[in-house]
Length: 273
Image 1 (cartoon, rainbow, N blue to C red):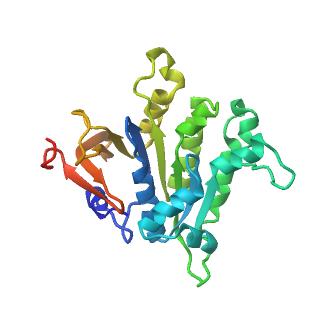
Image 2 (spheres, rainbow, N blue to C red):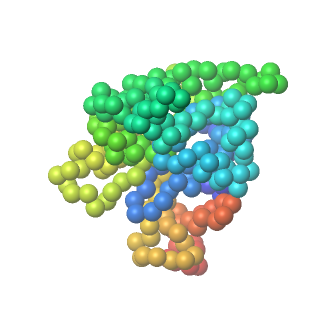
Image 3 (cartoon, one colour):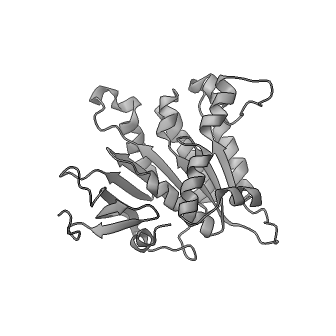
């Protein structure tokens, strides 16, 4: 969990907004450190987390979680964390074996054109159980859905419209109905040809940006590589002033450490202006 980022977003594990849809997007860099932050943040906030790990194994997230001071294994055992290991579950569908049951959540792999209803049903059943009590008798906090990352679904043959529908229904269930939060990561290929954009990552990013309430867009430095600064993050809040939507945007530079990250207002780092 990155305390400097919490300060930027004006939040803490003891006090955070509910009903938020946070979109993490990246261009020409790796924004996965933000997914690890939000995972540790919401586990520390005692929320019940449904995590769709489509990009990495559980072991990967667990190792990073330990560096940030949380145990994903213990969270699973207590029922606080529901984890879908997309890589492993995909194999059960693509390469069926007698001793390994097929994943219902990933059965869209048989025919990606049918959409993501099965994956949504997995999410819905997971978040609807968010009020389950832990061993000590206390209920978990509001549900949280984390996805790393939605772009994987495009590479698996799912139409961009189906992915946007999945995001929309998840937001309706998690953010609106249950007043929980949602964090999704999407990668954008900035070099994608314009005539392919409607079916690719650019179209997905545009649609998700329209849906979200907060967008954290991470990209490389326009000046090129710098060993002391790893990139820049644009923070865009969607607010309403009366009936008129209002965008508030700030730009920060950042450096990721082994157990955290440092953020600087643009031009405030001595490494790069």
